[in-house]
Amino acid sequence: MKSTSFFYALVSSTWAFPVMDDPETAQIARDLLRHYQPRDLSQDPLGISRAQTNCGPTPCTTFDAADQLVSVTGQNAYQSPAASDIRGPCPGLNAAANHGYLPRNGIATIEQTVSGLQALHNMQPALATALSEYAIATDGNVLEEVWSIGGPLPADYLVEGLLGTGQGFSYSHNAYEGDASIGRNDAYTNAGDAHSLNITKFERVYALGGTEDRYTLDKFRARFEAVQDESIANNPYYFTGAFSTVVVEEPSDYLDGYNFKSFFGVTGEPGNFTWIRGQERVPEQWYRRPTSDQNTAPDVFVDVGIGYAAYPNTLKFGGNTGTPNSFVGLDVANLTGGVYNAADLFNGDNLACFSYNILQEGIPDFLSDILNDITPVTSFINKYVGPIVGGLNCTQIEGQSTGLFNDFPGYKYSPSGPDTNY
Image 1: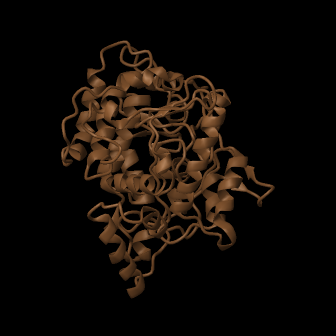
Image 2: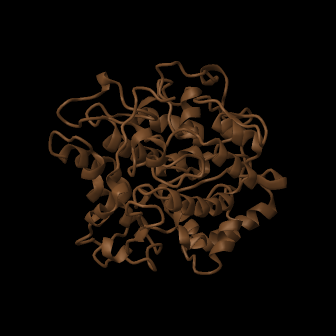
């Protein structure tokens, strides 16, 4: 489910139902792989998006119940969070904490994140590591290597002298959390709250299932195009950069309304939905991705390319300039010193290289109230992201500048959160 952030979208929506191992499914997989392996999205991009299997770029062609069934009993039985526990904007992370796949207090180390996301979603450890270290670097505690899935870290998790605050996932505006969510409000238009579910938005997303009661990746992508326009029309601080990009996965067979509501902590029927804050659940008989086809970093960027190729109007870098409907877009070539442009951004590893370079330059802007130099932070990121980036075929970018974002008030907007927010 694309929503407010890279992490939120990726983790909350790597859902798995079984794909039966039959000749017809296998042939569909082979046909689709012919599109993905060369990463050539020039031919019928909308058709590719609509035909994409629920496992993402590499279809899941086998089903092993023993391997894929997610436990919701024993140590993974559902528990409602205590008043002191932290929950945030990501249904998948909240559900993971409510079932003990992540620490139930909502504060996790890298090791706990990797273990939990692998057990619940079968996310590849290298990808889970990179995502959690980014959360730690931008909104957590680098020295203790912990991060919050929701609001600010408690005082005893903060280290004075390195970073001023550890605002957590809920208040990571433009780092993880971004504008134009299909389920939540923009931070600026909701007093800094981009983590609470907007039940009206949820109802619109729920309606995407139609009479078939099925939710697909392509339907979510199409809805994202609409909510971008809504945000531009209503949020004077609307901003979209390379940091909180669109990354979406969907279930590997189908997601129906019952399970959709369970993950979002929603009860009732259309026209009478109720969101129960912090009560997200993993449904019974829920299957993760197969271990033979874990979610990987290359999958993420291929998925992004598929989505943008199918819906090119969603490829936006820039923002409003202080009033609604004042959107000004920035050219990829200007952001990269001419190394990349919009036409070749999705060729090979270009998108991953572009995102990483822009991220590196933007790190100082993400860190509020820095009291020391940022060398420990950049070293921390390089330590964990290096193994992924090292395998990319990147052209060195000279002269790229996130300084171009300074004309947009939404780029610098940084809400602060309460002690708890679930």
